[in-house]
Image (tube, rainbow, N blue to C red; front, side, top):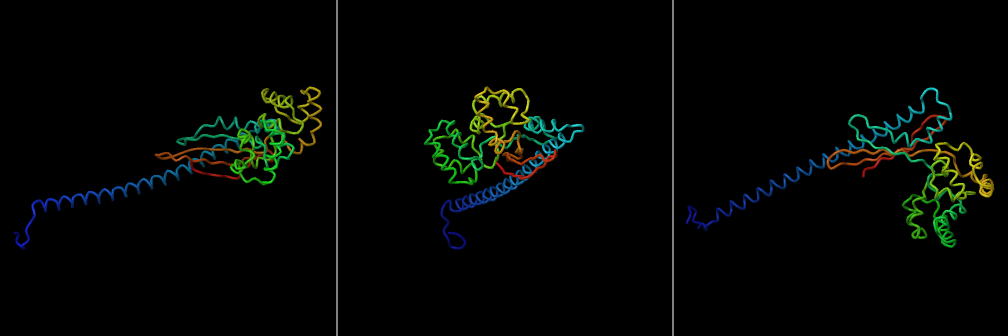
Length: 287
């Protein structure tokens, strides 16, 4: 019997103290977890900001380098065009500055067949050269034309008629505009008006030699008679829908920051106007 007339059960006080300690440990653990989550969240937000600024710095390095290359004293127009056509090679030689961890790539416009710009005959030839039957090619073309303008590359994958032609999707695009002879792959070149296997090989031979096509007529000299006649018969279509060199490039810079690492990507469009480099359409995202 206690002072207050209450009988104390054996171990009651010890059990109460034990549960109190457990409760305090749980509370401290919960508070600690919340604090750690807050610190992690703060660190992650800082890593995101750092990565975004870092990748913008990488883009600035690339753009400044490209701009400098096009303003070297004494450059002739021929040299300007050659540098423009080799912009991907220039970007591949870039090196990070200071602590920035950068990587860069440059892709020319016009390396894919733009489904919103190509006519039905070109699209049909493309699908046939990709292994589709005439009926299947007609079905695929009709499906694409009914969906024009196709909004994105992702929307292309939703076209049912293209489901059995997965490889073809790698050579189809949205928004690329005219096909570029200096960079388009053979799978795209063979679908162009007037192009034969000999014409495709003629373009590839020019690329391998390090030369550039300065006019559509430059290609005719290397073609056998039948391929030359076919090519020349379609010159008016080619001039209207095909470019000799890229009209623009997509410059892509990548960088990151933090632990775990936040990966940031920044893309800008680069164009050449009157010998000067212009930049537009920036897009930044995290991966």
